[in-house]
Image 1: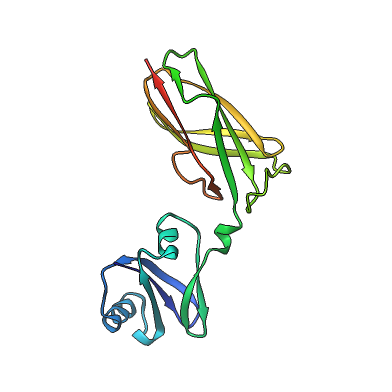
Image 2: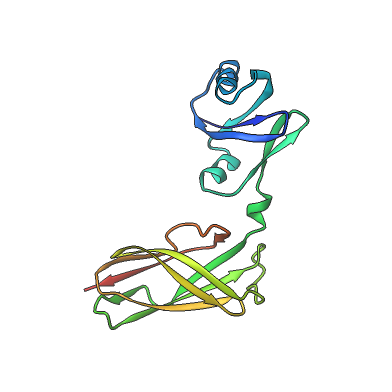
Length: 182
């Protein structure tokens, strides 16, 4: 399978990208021209094996842009993604009783983009998605000095996963799992 990017040469824009079986380049470009207008020479198609590091990062949801050299896409840049700060999660317990009384403390720190430490200048709120025994939830964390915490209580048994997905303008350094038991 190949990871591909279709770019429009005239304005150096990305038209589409994805994963597909190896393809006949001329036929594919002709199909693109039929769908988007113009002729096949108006478009450039960049492709690499889907197992390459760049393709894996794209599949994982990292923000990227196509790198143009002249009229050709020559690679992928992750500069926007790499400039994002990290969210680091921890908890004071990995299990709690599903009795609505015991609680677990979830701590989140905003780390600098190079992970050299906590961004102590960060003040604000971040909505954190989490999977709970009751379904998907989003909990807002209020940060002062780059740190925030919230207590959770469980009334159903099951697994909590925090965060359960990427938080759009941050990268996740890790996640925490808490088991609520009866």
